[in-house]
Amino acid sequence: MQTLTDCDKRQNWASFGAKSSAAPIRLQCLQRRDRARAELQSVLRERDRTEQKSLEKRKGLARRTRRPAEDSLAAAEIKLQKAATNQTASIDELALRTGETAVARARADGWADALNEVLSCVSDARISFFATSLRRCANAWEESASSLNSIARECRARARQLPKASLQNSAAAPAWVKEVLAQASSPG
Image (tube, rainbow, N blue to C red; front, side):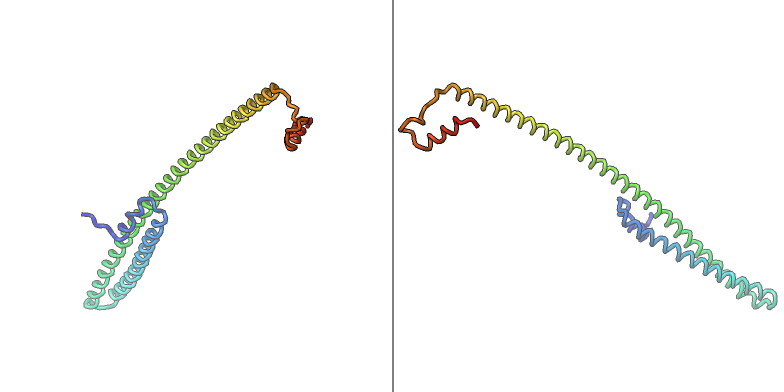
């Protein structure tokens, strides 16, 4: 059965394309790697000191003093192996997280490209729809103008057919009617 580390648990939801959440997890992995590297270097220095002491004791000391030096050398070797294992694990985890980050970034870029493509289609569709609407409006206005011109021609034709009344001279016509008729018959 495989168990998830804290880093794995925090990263699970980041694999769905959350670019911003991958960076802190990757940073944590980098920090763990640096701590493991520092621990490994510390253990290596300790092992080198222990080996140096061991060599010095072997040269000049009696057999009874060699045993503790060998024990401390073995302990240093164990610490070195443990630190190396920790560093290897942290580097492996960093590589995994880096890969997951790259996958998440690629997914997010793909989604952004798909969204841009959809939006460009929407924009093109809106422009096409707007142009069609404008053409239809222009046609409607042309038809309306044509109808109004036709009606105006009919009104003029009917007006020519009507007999000319001479209400201006008539005593029964009110003054305002005489004025309107005078304006209508004047050229202008």
